[in-house]
Length: 238
Image (cartoon, rainbow, N blue to C red):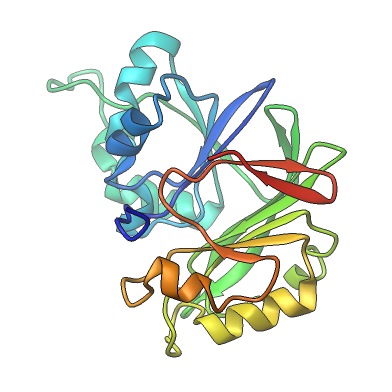
């Protein structure tokens, strides 16, 4: 079961609300599986198909709760507006199915959402920038990095002192736009988070086999994994 993988995404939930990072074509399936019926925010890392094409499926949430705040960089918004032009360019004469209701919020500095301090930072995905995110509630620190093959020094400086790091590890062999396992582990060794979870894995990773060879404090994520982040430790709730 841990080798059946839908596309990468993350839900963060606390007493103040719930947010999701990235919204693939698997979004509806994932929300039904996890019985999530409300979102307070959506954060986007970049506008590749496997990270945004579930955007239409926020409509059932709109029907109940109204427009959804969506946070993304200026570059990501430019691409999202082009791909979903029918959402943003619909005029008063629009006739068709219901459109996603989006409260667009451009990020270029730290911001607050559901009681969390969020620091966006750039990572390199081939020849362009993707947004990583660091989250703090004043007690615990975590970060999420997907789709990158290089983390700039300025961003590495923002990633120290983490309780949890969730980070891209596509495959064993080097890749031109993603981290491979050896390079991912070198970043983890440098940053020394309390716990690391590998994400965005390809199917050449067999979960049980690969997990047996990972260093202490590093584990492979899997669909449906739930963890509780506490100061100095991460508790597996699944």
